Length: 434
Ligand code: AMO
Image (cartoon, rainbow, N blue to C red; front, side, top):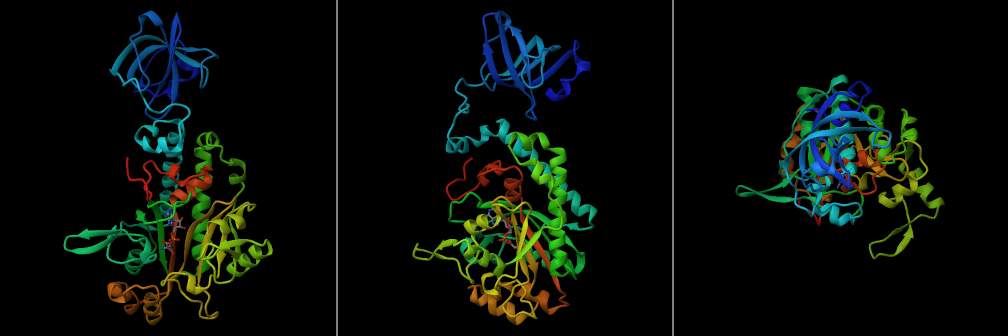
């Protein structure tokens, strides 16, 4: 079946064309009825019928139209229209289609199963699919093996407070927060590996960049150093964004993304140390809230949060790696620099223009005693991680990797304020339907 954008070309003018789709807009005049028909990829074309010849129609009814293609500059979306000769109704929609032009964000989320038919969501879905396509292409070309780690797991990776518990037969299990530990197990026999899985975080905070379920792209490689990991991250992201801009410029422009500035991003990305970041924030008198909700100046030892990352990147032009975090604010698996006690060999990657963290990665600790000690500090029971500790007992090698949040990348690239709009069916603390 033809799609609107394939039909709308000069060679089809004067020829009979056929299209199947949904009534996107409907305008009835005394003589003529104008139907804007939307195909199954969101393309639209105007169809015109004599009003007395047309059956009563409603928004979102599914129809099949046949007619002659004509060029008419008054026609929306490209100046072509179909002068209809036959109209078959496949399904007449109820009269009260709930999505119109001006709806609250909450209502649009309540009706997300129907909102996915709006132009905005269609363009977002296209960009998302393109990002995933080029991510996979990058790894294939760079000789990484794709693997499929489990989603139901027994242990935390990113701290116990954001674990989703579930009943697994007669025992307790969790939804995976990160595939990292499993990827670490695979590098000994499969070399550089990567995966794309849903990760789950029981995030209690409502922010514009946290979801309870997100698409997590993770990679892990043996025999690498921190610089090599960061280089893979920047090459991957650069490959994704340049190809996505090339293939989806219309969608990005529709969403008012800053395409020219993204086009100018190249590797290497910028880098600052954690201490430099704190100095910068202090010089701007940047305040954070303490545990009692009182404002105080940010200090060494504080983690960077959504506000501090926004402040650091609000005028940045390219992504920024923050390196050399104090080891105590990083998870148990982050390797401590043997030459600089207390410094973690890891880095967070912050997107420019205030969008903040999109990826995080680094070298993995290979000293088994140190891992066990830090697990205990984090309240994790090393007994649950015996299999992981085996990786340090049997032929451990220096290794590292990273995790990239697809929704965070899409949010930055497509200039989307709320991360809920980067997913077709978002999961948050207050939303599990539809
Ligand atoms: P981290 O917890 O920083 O690190 O997660 C990696 C990346 O995943 C994305 N992300 C999220 N996206 C949406 N909603 C959330 N609630 C959410 N939480 C995280 C972010 C983040 O940068 N295993 C380590 C990574 C590693 O060292 O390999 C990890 O999961 O983009």
